[in-house]
Amino acid sequence: MLSRCYTVAFNGLQTIDIEVQVQLSAGMPTFTIVGLPDKAVAESRERIRAALFSLGIKLPPKRITVNLAPADIVKEGTHYDLPLALGILSGMGIVDQKSLASYVVLGELGLDGKIVRVNGVLPAAVMAQKSNKGLICPAEQGKEAVCAGGKDIVPAASLEELINFLHGNLKIEAPEEDVFDLAYSSLDMRDVKGQESAKRALEIAAAGGHNVIMVGPPGSGKSMLAARLPSILPPMNRQEALETSMIASIAGELKGQGLIVERPFRAPHHSASTPALVGGGRPARPGDISLANNGILFLDELPEFARSTLEALRQPLETGKINISRVNSHIEFPAKIQLIAAMNPCRCGYLGNPARECARAPRCAQEYQSKISGPLLDRIDIQIEVPAVSPWDMASAPEGEHSEEIRKRVIAARKIQYERNCEMGCPELYTNSELNGEFLEKATVMDSEAKALLVGYADKTKLSARGYNRTLRLARTIADLQNENILRRIHIAEALSLRWKVPDYKF
Image (tube, rainbow, N blue to C red; front, side, top):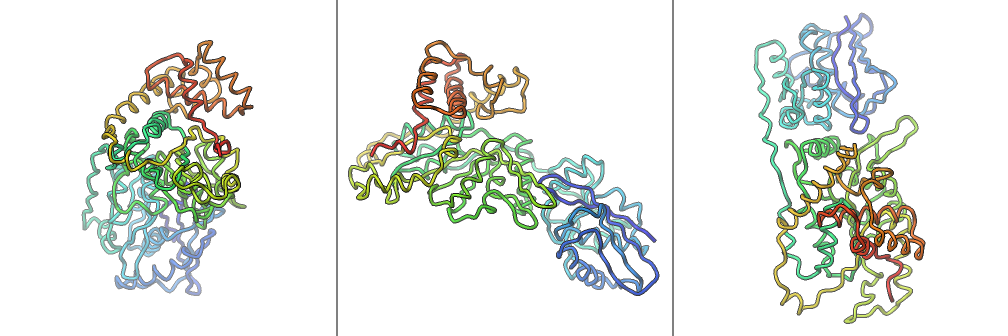
C-alpha cells in the first residue's frame, strides 16, 4: 500500500513542496529512506520507532520504503520526523489518508512521542496558506504559525494527541493571533550628552535609510549613538515584520512568539567569521546581515573584523540580498539593512585628541585605517567624526531632544519619499537610499547653483560615479526633512560635508 503525506524543504526563505511517499510491502523487514536525506533525516528512523513504541505501536514486519519526492533535492533537518511517522501510520491503516491530504506537516519527534519545536514553521505556514492547506506543527509554535494568516492550524503536543485529532476524537484549538502593535526601542537620544552634529547625521540616516560610519576616540559615544538609532526609526509595517520574522524562524530564533514588531539591531563581535556574518553552514542558516533585515547591523571596531569578512558586505549593501552559492544549490536571503559602523582613528585610538596624543602618528592611523578598503567606504553614505566630549560639556550640556520628537520628523520625511516613489511608479521602494537609475534622476532635480557645486566637487576630488549618486540620495533626504522639492546648494553642501573621508583624516 502506498500512502502520502506532505511537508516542505527550505531554500533560503523559499519553501519547496515535498511529498512523503511511504510503501509497506512484503519482504525482509527493513526501514529505508531515499530521496537524498541528510544525517538528521536518516536518524529519524530510530526516533519514529521509539515514538511509536511509546504508544504501544510496533512497526509491521514488512519492507518499509520512504521516498522524499522530488528526489533530487537534499532534505535537511529534523522536521521530517512527523510527516514520516504519519505516512507510516497511514500505511498501517491507523490514520486516514484523506485526512492527511489537506495538511502540510512538520515537527520533530521525541522518543516519548512528544512533538518538539523545529525551525521554519512560519515560512511553512505562509506556503500552506497560499496552497489552501492546513498546517500541523509543534504545539509551542502554534502562535508562530497563526501569524501567516492561515485558518486551519493544528498545534499538536504529542503524536498520541495528533492521532486522536485525526480520528475526530479530539479538538485542537489554534491560539489567537496577537494584535499587530507598533514597537520602538526603549533607549532614548536624550541620554547622549553633546554630539549634536552626530545626532543630526543619524537623523538624516534614519530618514533616508543611509549607511553610516562614525570615527572617534574611545568613549566619545559612538556605540551609545548607534544603540539609540532604532529609537528614531519608523515602526515596521506588517509586511516587513512578517519577512523579518520568517528569517528568524528559519534561524530558530523565533522562540514561540508571534511576529517580531521591533526593528532588529544586530551587533556581532569583531571575531565573527564570514559565514556567521553573511550566512552559510550546513544546513544553510541566515547570518547576522539577514537577521538584521529591515533593521540595523552595527559593526563596532570595524577595522578589527577580518578583511575578507568586511569585503563580503559589498554586494549585499548594493543589492539588499545575499547569495550563498554551493555546488548543488544557490540560496538567497534578504539583507536589506542599514549599516552602522564605528571605529577609532588609529590603533591606540587617540589620534587628534589634545588631551592624549597618539605617539605613533601618522603611521599608526595609516596602518589602522588601511584595513578598510576604498570600495567598502564608497558604499557608506555618511562618514562623520565623533570627537571626545569633555567633562565640562558632560556637566553643562542641556537635555537633548527626545527620540519621539526626532522620530516624528523621520516618519514625515519617509512619507514624502514613499509618496514620491509611488508617483514615479516604484511603490516597492521605501527610502531614498534605494533610488537608482532613472528614478534617482527624476527624484533629484537640482537648481543651477547646486549642480555647479556638486559637479565641481566631483571633478576636483575625482568622486566615483557611486559616490556621486550616493551624494545625490543624501541631499534628497536632507531636502525631504525640510519638505523641499528642488535640491539647493545648501542641501548639496551638507551632503558633501557628511561624506567625510576616513583616509583624509588630518594628522
